[in-house]
Image 1 (cartoon, rainbow, N blue to C red):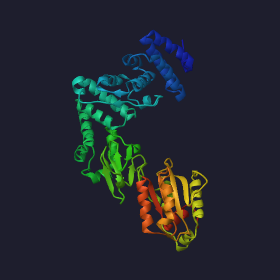
Image 2: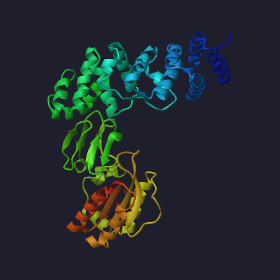
Image 3: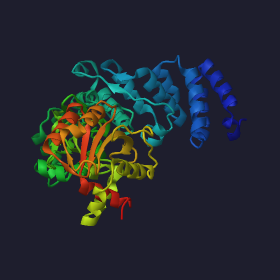
Image 4: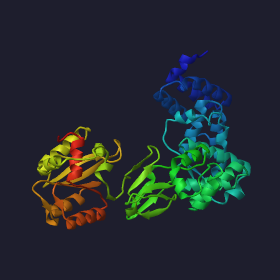
Amino acid sequence: MANENDFRDLEFCRKLISRAIREKNFEVIRSLLNRISSVFVFSTAEFRKEIVDLAYSELNSWSFKETVEIGKESVLGNVLVLCYAFKKICVITPEKIAMAADLLKLVHIEDPLTFDFIPIEGSLALDLHETVASNVKVSTIEKATVACELLFINGRLEKSKDTASGMLVLYENSRRSEHKFKGRIVSSLLDKRLDLFIAHLKKICRGIDNENQLAVNYTMVYDVLVKAAVPIFFDLNHFKFEFDKFYNDNLYFARFLDKSGNEHLLMPFEEINSTEVQKIFDLENEVFVTPTGRVGKITVYDVYSFRKTREISDVTLDQLQTTKQMSENEIGKRLRQILHDQNITSHSPAEKADLYLHKLYVNNENDLRDAAIIIKGKGYPKITLKDIASNLVKAVDLPVQVVFLVYTGILLDEPREKFTNQCDRAKKMHCIVDVVDLTKLLLAYTKID
């Protein structure tokens, strides 16, 4: 009689699984998967992956229904069925809704740990349309709806507009009242009907009667909808800048600040002119951030690598005078030191005619961007277009996301406008740092007294 330690031996498991599956003895296979599950749950990720890989390789030629039949009762069996679904079903079409419904036969599918045990990446997609109502039983649709919600909650259903539309088809063809309600919420978002969304929202959230109140309670509303298992989603990576447009590819509102600092909400799957977007609200960290791909103005206070600058409120005339007496090399050296203290290295040790190349963090310590920094020090008391023209041409031609113009003198209107226009045309973020902000930056990082 095999004991628990025997099932920690991969070769032993392989021989038993291979033999049982080859003989297609369902009762023996179910018993075997259940015995291995007691070890599988408490083993390392590496061991679990080995077990799943060897078991799946033996089951690879079986039908989905057969796999569900032998795997529905054990944790390992549930994991194998889900792996089969991700690898072979891939897209849930009207013809495959019954397969999705069969996932509810898995005893452990409501346990999030079951999904954590799956050693492969991937998710299912939805491709459903109106023919579902005429070709699939309502009871099957209702089961598939619950299964898809579980997949979505556990991050295994693709987050896309197609998924939102597919879930709406399921909701609209279910008889369950909770499904109908979720369908109305999803429909209002897809149809860009803010009035209807707020009307439906009132049933589960009090005190939200208009867009302003929705913006104020933005995070709370999202959390309530998630807890209600409404298949909304929000990811900063789903914001897209394409040509001169900003597109919200989330099934939730984009909360953003315009260039004047005013707050707005953008409906799901809606686009606006990219120049209108200054910052986007990050739901996970609950802060406004500068999104990847955005073009236009940012301030030195927006840059995570220079974040301590916000702590300096005032500077003295003596401190300003110290900064004004610095050369380009002196300023560049201090900026390198600030970035070096954050374990960031330059692109290369060389600088070209007051143009410095660096890497720095924009939103947080995981958001590393390439930057070009044009510096004009004490040798340029009054900065003309001629003074920055060659630097600017080189900077906008580089594969960088941010261009800085740092100066200690007086920047005339013409070079300021040219700098802004050229960066916008090249689709770069740009930041102008005058002598006051530069002094605050250097003070914040103790590079001057």
